[in-house]
Length: 372
Image (cartoon, rainbow, N blue to C red; front, side, top):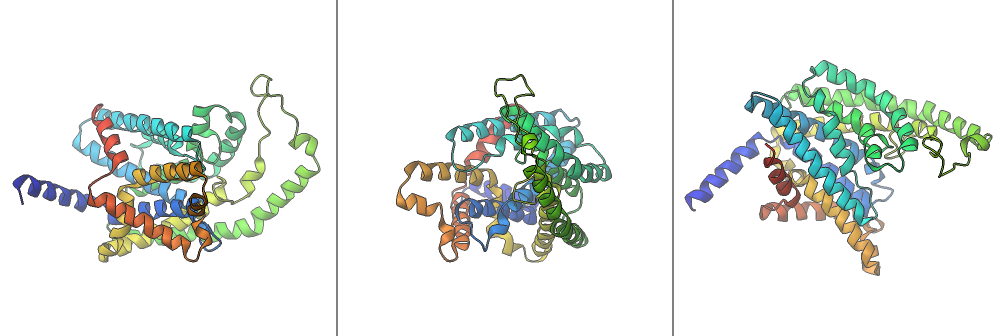
């Protein structure tokens, strides 16, 4: 082995040691869940709908804090961090709009993700307790605001990315802030992993009970009221009127439903509770049996590349419009289709890792270096 190759391997090993296996594995599971949701959804794995994105946002918030703390430790001021976040946001935003132009079968959330990076930057220096407080408040404030934004900013691309509905930055803000606060913890400590599991259960169980016995009744009551007041709820909108008189009625019923990617408080809290439990379990496993997580870690390290790949793959299969391409879009209809899809994603990530290929991450890092 050459000296250059040996040094490269040593550097890779050092980087691997700094990475948190549980975080990479959680992010990898989130991406695998997205593939299952888009290509292999069925009644057995329907729980992945919406929850995978919540898990991904929680992991993103954790990664965001870890990255910020490491950069602030290396540099005296905040300017390098600010420039890196700005550069990353621009790159992700541009990539998102390119993917949106494909007009494929799946929603593209990269543009909202880029806005989220920007708008949480001023909160990097907040105390941990304040981050948790802001996150808690956001779970109740952001959903109604994003529902209003869905009406007001429907046809305004950038504003919609910021606050226009359940796939906007504002809708994901509570979970992302929760992740930022969790990122301040020592994620290698077993006691913290147990706290994540306990906290997740304390969130998930009561909120699920409220959702089943309270929110569903409120939803039915609202829909009954809406049915008897169609002239108010479904008032005709003049598309040529001045803003905001040309906007659609606000869909308040979204706040009472826990449907996947609906953006309601209940949906976000249920998904966050489940994600905390899963993350805590992964932390426990990673601390003692790290090798078990490495298959999922490969996907997590290439999360952006794998995310972009599914958007392009969905567009390509839909464009072909052949029997076999349509069959690939519905793998979930065959026995163990979800498991098969998960295996395919893991194998793809192993191939990318084997050849040290991570197109999106590599381009993003090169773009960032031009500004740091």
